[in-house]
Amino acid sequence: MSYLLSRYLREFLEYLEIEKNRSLQTVRNYDFYLGRFIEWFGDKKPEAVTTDKVREYRLWLNRLIDVHGDPLKKNTQNYHLIALRSFLKYLAKRDIASLTPEKIELMKMPDRQVSFLDGSDLSRLLEAPLAQMAAIRQGAAGNNTGGNLIKYRDKAALELLFSTGLRVSELVGLKKSDVNLKKDEFTVTGKGRKTRVVFLSAQAKYWLKKYLDIRPDLNPFLFVSHDKRTGKRVKATKKGLEADEVPLTPRSVQRLVQRYAKAAGITKPVTPHTMRHSYATDLLQNGADIRSVQAMLGHTSITTTQIYTHITDRELRNIHKKFHGKKRGSD
Image (tube, rainbow, N blue to C red; front, side, top):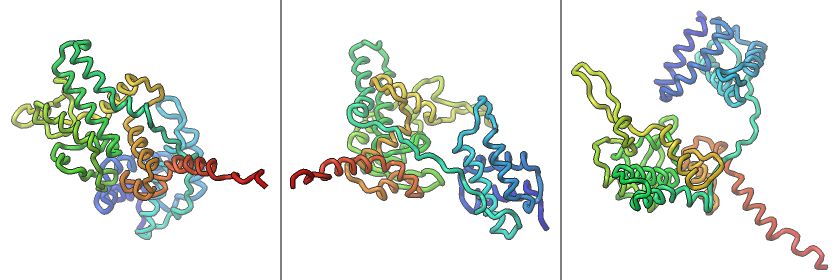
C-alpha cells in the first residue's frame, strides 16, 4: 500500500535522526526543503513524482523570490534538490515506487573563491587585541578592569581560530574541560557529529591560559560573554528562576572578528570562516598535502578541500616561471 508523501517525509526525518545520526539542525533543514516541495507539488503519492514535475519545480525555484525580494541563490536551489534526491533514495531503499533519484541532476556551480588573510594582514589582526590592551593600560581607553578580560578572551579566540581552523559553531560549543592545556591537541565534534583532532599552537596555548587564569566565573564554556547583561540567560523552572550559563554566540564571535579586522586596517570583509580559510591556506603554503588538510578541516570529501587548490596553482606558476624556457635563444 502506498501512502502520501507527507507520511513518508515524517518517517524519513525520523530515519535521518535515528539511523543516520544527523544533527537536529540538519533534520530541520531537510524538513523545510522537502516541506516546500510538498507544498508546491501537493501531498500526493510518491509515484506521481516524475522528471517533468521535477523540471517544473526547478523552474519554480529559479523564479522564487525570498523574503528580502531577491531570487534564491543557486546553491540554495541545489540544497532543495539535494534534499529531494536524498528523500527519493530513501523511498527506493524501501522499494517504494517513485522517480529514480539519479534522474535529479544538480545545477553546475562556479568554482568557489575563498577569502583568506596572509602576511601582514593576518599578523595585524592577531595583534589587534594586544594594541587595545596597551591602550587600556595607558589609560587611553579609561580605567576598565573588565576591558582587559574581554581583550584576553578575544586574543585567545583569534589565536585558537587560526591555530585549529575551527568552525565558529565548534568554537562557541567548546567547554573548558574539552581543552587540556598540558597537551598540544584536543578532540572536537564537527558537522555530522564527526570527531577530529585539532592542534594547538604555542601562541594559542599561551593566550588561552592567560585568559582562563583571570576568569572570575564558573561558567563551563571556554568563551563567554563578560557583559553582565548578556552573560547569563534566566530560565523558568518548577523551583523558580535559575541562572543558565551560556557560551558566547556565533554572532558575537563574528562581530569581534570584524571589529579587530577594522582596527587592523583590513578593508575586505573578514569573518570567522576567513580565519578557517587562512588556516588551510597557511598549511598548504608551508608544504602540507591536501589529504592532511582535508583531515584537519574535518571535510568528508576531498572535493570540498580542493577549493584551496588556488594555493598549489600559485606554486605551479612559480615553478613554471623558474624553470620554463631557460634554454630558448641559447642555441
